Image 1 (cartoon, rainbow, N blue to C red):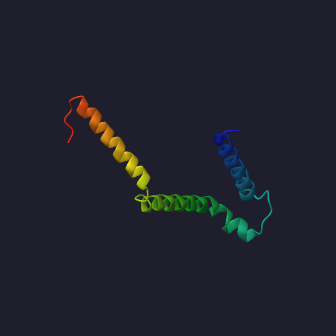
Image 2: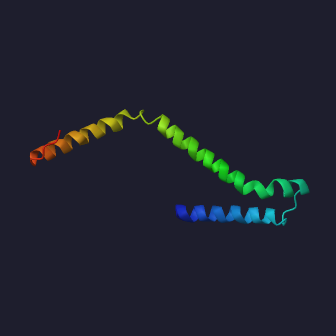
Image 3: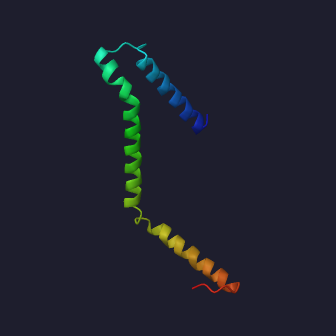
Amino acid sequence: MTRAQQTISFGLLLSSLYLALFLGLIPLSPRVQDEVIPYLPFWVLVSFGAYLLAKLGWGVFTFNDVPQAHKELMEEIALARADLSAKGVDVD
């Protein structure tokens, strides 16, 4: 099973569970049924957005902590400059 199939299966499972809760097929207390279940998709969406923002923020925060990638990039730039200079292109 591919990753996409797993994700779709998991999404369908959660959607059917939510639909069963929303329609009252799974008995819950009336307070939970009326005050929590209708707002559950919004809560999930906001939580997912907060998670993605935190992950993005952490990636930006730790961006400069990759000295090996910086070294590789500088070597590739030097190699490209040497290649272009050998072809007669003025690189400065």
